[in-house]
Length: 317
Ligand code: ADP
Ligand code: MG
Figure (cartoon, helix red, strand yellow):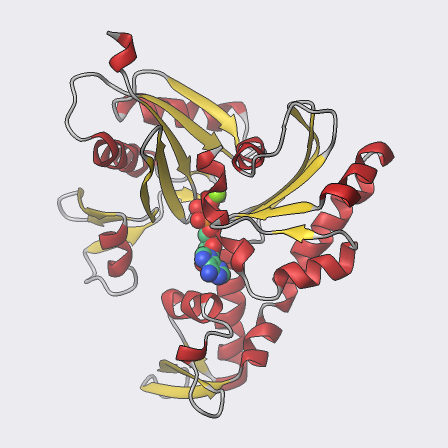
């Protein structure tokens, strides 16, 4: 019977959850958000639906991300979310599936056990953990077991993970808490300081995702942004340029670039030489931030490769 048991791979991210099913490919790709009713303590919505509620919910419904910086912040919500996405991936079945979950490389034993426990309570048969940078490397079709070194940079919502991989393991790695969310916050901050306007998290994220997107600009190449006036408290709108956004995110982007630089400095020379030939891989949703690859390439002088749909590399691996 065991051949009937399904195995699912889950990338349990801060920003999104992806599930990969053998022979079917990616069956779930949704925001890692859970909406809860505070009075009844019941979950109202999970995933896409819940994300749409973020920042718009009445007081007694809170939409939150169960994971923060790649580790479980709300155990109960994480368990429910795993359960929901697991069922969504396989439908009704008598056999509990095995679950392979990708976790950030920096997490400790207690945090690992929490993930396994949540997965078990959510109804998984067996749970296996795999370190994210390794999974990302497999996803990029890198021969992980080769003695040749490769560098993978995964930029998610909460964390950026940089790792040099060779012979099936990580030789040098570093994880920082500057990633996609930090860019959103930097955009909000910038607009608050320069225009005295407060914008929501979703607005900030949309600005980041749509940099350089023609549809979002008017004929003068300006982008309209709506928010609330910091002084009067009333709704207002302003027009900004691409340069405003690029300037706003330059600090977090520089931090990411510096981190890659520092990992390269710690890489043994033999492996560093391989990297020059092979290039470095940029994965995770943050890989799509406009201009990041170019900035990185200029700084480190090594070709930067962004695979098609970089946000799916971890779960594919
Ligand atoms: P996690 O592994 O933490 O769940 P993801 O790999 O899904 O994170 O990446 C999520 C981050 O990528 C978010 O900050 C999101 O705003 C950002 N992102 C997704 N698509 C784009 C895009 N096209 N341009 C810029 N940033 C993007
Ligand atoms: Mg991720």
